[in-house]
Image (cartoon, rainbow, N blue to C red; front, side, top):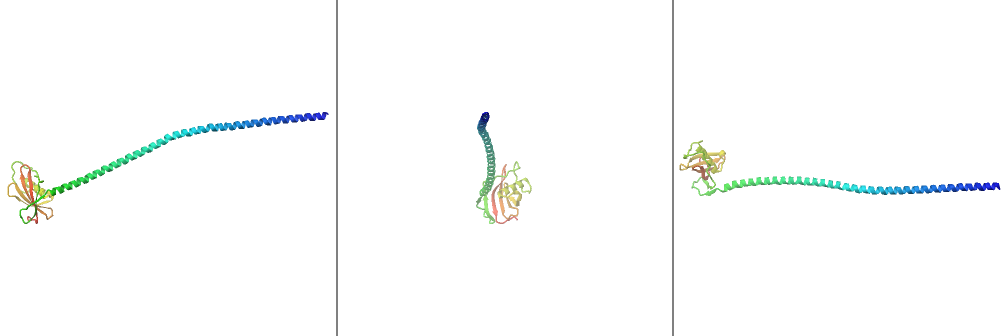
Length: 235
């Protein structure tokens, strides 16, 4: 009897230990499960909290980036504006240069036209009947060449005198020859104290002109008629 009782008591103790152990294990399992759950929940919560922040930061970054982009765009626009301004200035300079060139060309053409007009102002008239005269011209555009002389005028055929030099100038004007390159072959009285006739040519050019001039009081000598000669009869 005593042995069975001991065995039963011992068995109860063992069962009690098992129960306690099972209880402890169960509690540990619950604690671990709760801990894992809480840990997962915290992670999710933290993740959820972090993600909005990241989103917010991302959105904030966009807000910041957007003005930066706008600023870059503004800088680009400024560069484009500067480029356009420089291009406009270059175009303006080109246009101005082109306008100046056109003005110069027009002036040159005008000068040429003026010279041509001066030639066109010569009017061919009937000659004197001299067989050596190829053509006779006159022009209303001829003016007195001016004078340094004052008082009563006296025609002088002394070479190098003031009157001689002024006659040479008037003859060159009538012949259309530069006085510096003109050869004065002959200078004579024109039949009165206020007229003279000169025979001239230009350099080695064989073309010869007989120029008639007359004195205008206070204004000097003036060409009145020019004859183009077939040959130089004063050579």
